[in-house]
Image 1 (cartoon, rainbow, N blue to C red):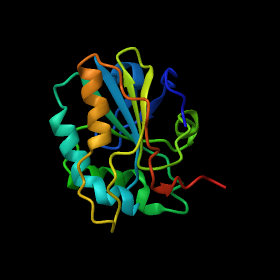
Image 2: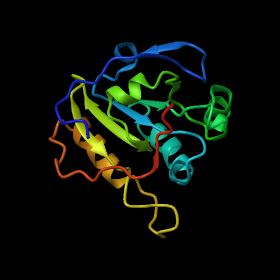
Image 3: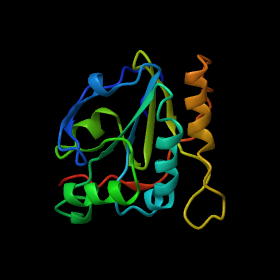
Image 4: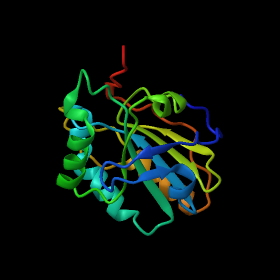
Length: 178
């Protein structure tokens, strides 16, 4: 996992929603930035898709900006291509950019391992949280609350330390290019 305190690796990637190039330093929030890796087909992401949209709405004007990225190999998983990403974002009413990491360099720089994988940075772009959304998984019967991630985001907003006891995210492996 990306060590706590690590500076967020910079990137410039195309946003499949707006068609614009998004740079981390231009898109970062004053209080914090949540960079998270998702894709369209993963059952773990599908399980959270509505909660991700709600998270975006709940924190819209908070000072924490959210940036979703997909890095899956579209040769093996064409349903995760840019056009399908744009449709997925629209269907879920995402109010944050959904970027396409075709080279997979950004996912590697963040040590992203799965979808979903969450990385929260403070206002100085230092990593304060990398871990799960909550304890809910497809089929385990636990409600989707976002408790772990929301607690971390609320700590950042309150200028309080984020608890260092963090549970790694679980999901589908990123589909790396051969």
